[in-house]
Image 1 (cartoon, rainbow, N blue to C red):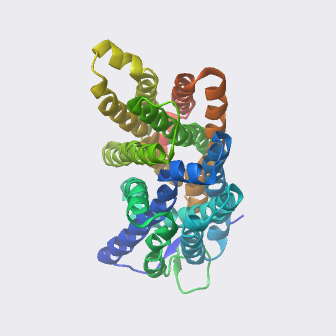
Image 2 (cartoon, helix red, strand yellow):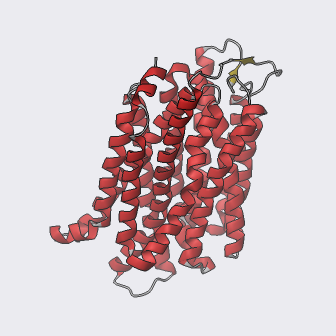
Image 3 (cartoon, rainbow, N blue to C red):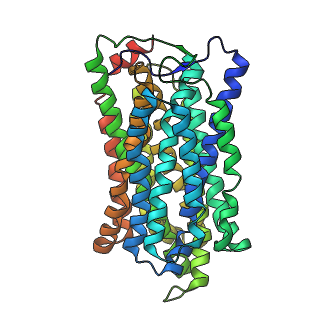
Length: 429
């Protein structure tokens, strides 16, 4: 393994150049994360058209999480040693090509293959891009990573609304046109990442950072941060699936119907898009607020308190129908659910960019690997969430599945409590 920093920037870049390049990478992240969101938002339509079972739909969500997540440490390893720009740009183009073909599928198996390929592309983009933003921002790393994180969230918000809108206006068969402009985004990312290198000998200036003397202690802290993020991202993947089922249930009850036809599937898809957007907006606001407000060295308290608050919101979401019955006004159910989903997203996603910045600070000689572990490496195991929730729903119902997610989110706070606060303060100096 190398004993020096994994990212270099061109010698003497001006502040303006750094800001422009950072902005381009951040903007490309918004577009990249909008691509899978478009497909997730129209899952109800795809489920009805392809006659998929609930288990197959859960598998589509789970595979997306697994592939986009587990590929990130691998992509980070290659980015730390070879060409980060090639990996990031290649990932963008691979994802656009696969997701753009979703409208042409005629079977569950075809959709599954496209989801796997596209998710690998999305995942490969993240480690080199996040590491580049952290390096370009210097001591304002936490703020830069927060903007990077929030851009992805906001891009997904757009995707969640754009998917159902495109299906209703031009049809599922024509959604590939949404992905054509991504080629221009890939070109912009290639220019922004030019000269950002993970190896010597290409005309860039490498920033050498020796392996810290207390590397073992630092790695232990990173693994605890990683475990907490595994739980948080599992909550995220679970909520994606639970909101689909909640939207279908709400649509059936609102229509007073016993079945679920194509028209109701479209209604549920539109409602699911709004609920996913509320979740994503909460994630974005959480990432931005904590990135701005949390001071270096004092991150531990936030990693405990914020997830606990999100767990409370998730528990209330599970009992939202009962709460509405107490208020005797069913019109309040939807706005209450939107608010609780926003708070839940804030609770589990807000701490994530904080963990990325802390991990990069703890491992200055492995910034891409730190980013990959905190983002995709954690997200990779989130695939168990939708499968677990589907199993709980079959046995005990939707409410119990939501309570399981609340418990997982609270557990992430417990793991974060084990991180050494002293170490965080020492490395913040």
